[in-house]
Every structure is written in structure tokens, then in C-alpha cells.
Image (tube, rainbow, N blue to C red; front, side, top):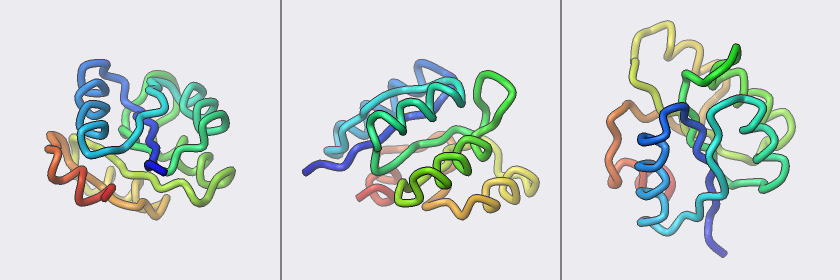
Length: 117
């Protein structure tokens, strides 16, 4: 059985790039979300093994808010944060959630495969 992933990214082109990378390494993409509510609904419906979580989302909530809610409902889902900023405040916020991993944009297929493989 193949691993599954949800891509949570507010930039459509970047989300498509991530989805393509995932498919190339054999991970099935079960959805794409740009808002917290969409991500939570897809997780509830599709129960992905992984979530690629951007820090900035459309709406009031950020990636950590969504990830913490996912983890309270499905602790077995692994969250991989994707961020363009490694400033201390962002990293501190991400580590509040105990992520599976953190990747800094731009990411490449080898990085993704090592984290999801």
C-alpha cells in the first residue's frame, strides 16, 4: 500500500510542484488545501499518512495552528513543515508542534524523498 500525503500550500504553482515531486517518489497525493478549514476536512476524509504544511495559509490561521489540530484528531499523521523562513520565531513556532521534519524552500525531490521515504 502506497503512502498518502496532503499538500497544504497557498501558492498553487508551488503546491503543484510539491505534488509532482511526491508522485515521482511514489507517494499518492490525496488533496491540496490553501486554507485551514480545507486542510482539516481533507485530513478527516482522506486520513493521509503525511501532510506537507506551509507556514503561511490563506485566512487567519497559520500552518502550526492547523497541524496542532490535525495532531489532536490524528496523532499518527506526520507533519512536514515547508517554510521559506528559518528565522528563530518561525522555527520556535514550528517546534511547538513536534514536527516530523522541516524543509526550507526551495526544496528538491531528493530532500523530499529522504524525509518521506
